[in-house]
Image (tube, rainbow, N blue to C red):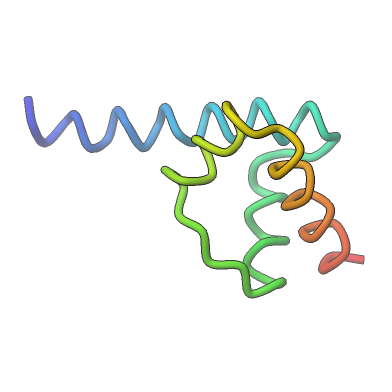
Length: 70
């Protein structure tokens, strides 16, 4: 169903971001809050893609999120 597909993909992106954020010692919600405070506007689809295929770049996002929360 095309309406459910949107929900399912969003849930998949969030799960992937959460897994990558936890590897870096952060939860999904804290990570997203840190990105918002750092004024980094990257959508969940792109973040999930970066989390899977470019770990160093994702770690950079995590560091910026941590810095904005400190």
